[in-house]
Length: 241
Length: 103
Image 1 (cartoon, rainbow over the protein chains, first blue to last red):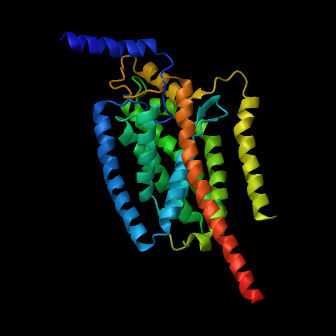
Image 2: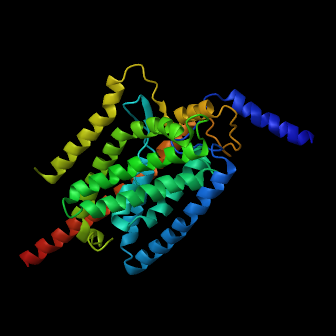
């Protein structure tokens, strides 16, 4: 019993003594109630499993694509580490998952995104283990799916524009989903889910607009370079989904 | 326009896009958007207590930036490896071709 009191007290003191608590742009550790934690884990798990399958199938077909896949995952690593200032006077970071969704389809990005989110949750206290399911869904599933379909729709019109819109909208939608997830878990007492959604959207989505544009442009640049070296890399972009 | 110039120009647009808030948005704290979301949660639901805390926390802001830069460095390293490799392949291919032509 004494031990338990001690544990509660020490946890409390952590909260009280650390006002500058380190949080991530993803949903913070402990900020989703348990039912929602379970819900998002259950929703995300099948995508991750299918993602692993898709990746191993892609590698079996053409082992040259391992290098390209390492590149798109590295792109997620680098972009999601860059916290950038925005017009709202706060910071957020891009996701980098659009590029991979364009080159490999949306499913493999569930795995790349998971790796980055685990890294950030365990080492950086950025996001969290309890909120991992929800964060994987927004950044590594919903964002890439949006990016993939936007790319498919516009690629015949103009390839560069398609890549830009795919990456930018995928990035933007990641944070729209984050806002929806938060408002479902924390509906406003008076105005309900919609009321709190407006509040969360005004924080996450507005901050994200310039960053989404930046991610779109950066993705166009790297896509152009990847396209330029198709022969040497041993991959053909048109044959990749 | 040459492709490399075009890409440099695009990169410049990104730099302007990201640095302009620092210049034009006055009196901003540039804290994380997530911290603000936390504020909204406590406003909507004052009784909400985060029921789980991070297992490991960076010991300070410096350690945090160390880990963030490590993350970016890993990414940058792999990207540099990729383009170094394919560029090297292209150069050695073109050398081989020129040798064949001379012979």
